[in-house]
Length: 230
Image (cartoon, rainbow, N blue to C red; front, side):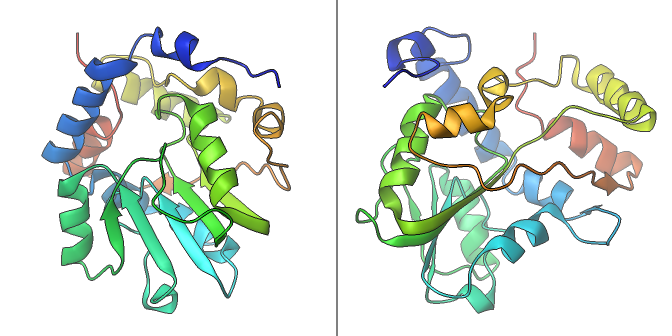
């Protein structure tokens, strides 16, 4: 089966391999929960957050596997007993436990610690754009899902309206670099990418979320992007 990029090609890309792994480990050790804090204050026209959108897409029964769960913002009491969060960062998982999340474990998106065909839903919030070897990750998602299971993911997208473009330009200046990620070219064609990894896209939705930024929150927003300095 043809794929956009094989393991060898991806490992030779900038930001791949041990150097990128070390950067991500340091990022989350220094800033656990930073993505959750920003997105939890980001609202759409209905007053809901991106995490609310993902939670609404989760079915009412069966195991939910949260890939690269971070501080587990998707965990809630209604998912108790059927939620499993997986992340490499011990700092993020410590924060998740502190806020009451149950059934979280340290592990890789490339080797999910679950049986084949056991998950009713797999979710992944704000991580697909930076995970190395994305095809391998999607292969693990497919392996974990039971027949008829659902994969729900959110990733950043490019600004559309004039106000978004102005805001994005300000963040570029604050972050001192472009707001782009290594997997952006693959994710621009999600139907093709997912089909090549055994997943059929049911919906591809773009929504705008706005966050009221104080001076402190603006600085945190700039720090939340996975951008290495010069």
